[in-house]
Amino acid sequence: MSSDVAASEVVGRPSVSAPDALSPEALADARRGQPRRGLLGLFFALPASVLLAVGWGGPVHTFTVLGPLLTFALPIVAVIAFWWQDWPGSLLTGGWSGLYDTVIVAVGGVLLTVLGQGLVSGVDLAGIFAPGPGHPSMSSVVPLAVGIFGVILQLTLVGECWPLRGLARVPSGLAALAVCWLVGLALYFGLVRTGLVVGESYASWIAALGAWQMIWYVALRGWPFARIPRRGIRLITAHLAVIACGWLSYLFAVHVLGWEANRLAEVSGSAIAAILLVAMLFEAWPGILLSEVLGRTLILLLVVALTAVFALMLPVVAGWIGVPDRQALSWSTHTTLNAVSLAVILHVAVWRRWLAD
Image (tube, rainbow, N blue to C red; front, side, top):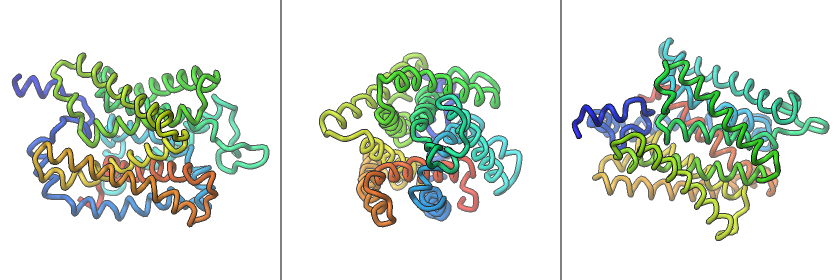
């Protein structure tokens, strides 16, 4: 297969997953810049993660209020980062670019949270920002947000943005957001609201699916699916394989390991955060210094080790900072999925490593 044909097969894929091996230029750049720019990125990611994990009136109030808002905002982050390539912030320069996009994410997250709440239980702004007696929290709506984000990751990473990438940049991102909302609503109302699936179980399965999306398409950059030359076969194979991995890991965790849904979600969130730190913030360093096979192996080992640290230590930290035992896993999941993961994606894909590159 000629290089022109190979290149045509990957046009339109999100840069985070295309191709499965970095180009010589990108690889050389990563080797030159890492680990320095990853360490500098921690000066943004760590304070942002702490702020998003505990900074809104303490840890419990933070994950109760910020958790749903951030989860509904995540699809907007995906659209700006992977569909619009930092537009409209790219119209500005320096830190103004990232700040502009972040404001859009924040405002859009609030609007989509209100929309989700309105569709599920009716609009109650007090329930979003100050839940209490007579104003229940957004816990029943969170599975809807999780499902929508899972769908947009499946379309963006596994599906290579096809077929919507054929549209212009802005319409394609808006269409992706609309389609994923429609699919997410159909899944939520068809499975959760009918009582076929408990909301926590649905969200934990989506979280497990998200972990596999990240493994194949961020940690391994699409390998081995990216090497299938024909797009139709590649996409069908990838979709089936990733969904099967999500199902099998869910069944194994629940029926073999005996995990509750919140434990599976917490471990899956830990894996997602670990992958983003290792493969996105540090660009798979030091694996990029080794051969292809050894490099991938090292990256996966680092991800497993960091996942274990998050999954085991964050519930302990929750106890230290006053989170009740029954909410420790929920806070840990919020910290990894909504705080650490969002901070890394914002720094790398939205702020474009401002001041760290």
